[in-house]
Amino acid sequence: MTLFQLTPAMILNMFALLTATPGIWLLHVTRRREQRETQHLATLTEQSQVDEPMHVMSVPALRLNRLCYRVGGALLGLALLVSWISTKL
Image (spheres, rainbow, N blue to C red):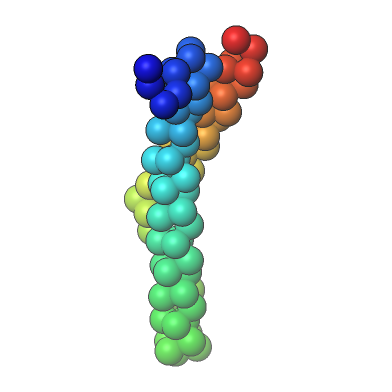
């Protein structure tokens, strides 16, 4: 006899947890990268001359952040859906 028996709901909840963990990590890392880049651009703007153009984030960096936010959000949404389905079993 085992310590606890694996029911289908418990297996689905474990899958939801394993799906949510990378999503949370991806959203956290993306937010930290975005804050670090914004802080770097703010220091560049403070150090620049008055007549220099404004420093903005590059287009590939913005696209990467947007993609990471979408994938992280999709993973969290999938985890929520799987967890909700496990309550119906």
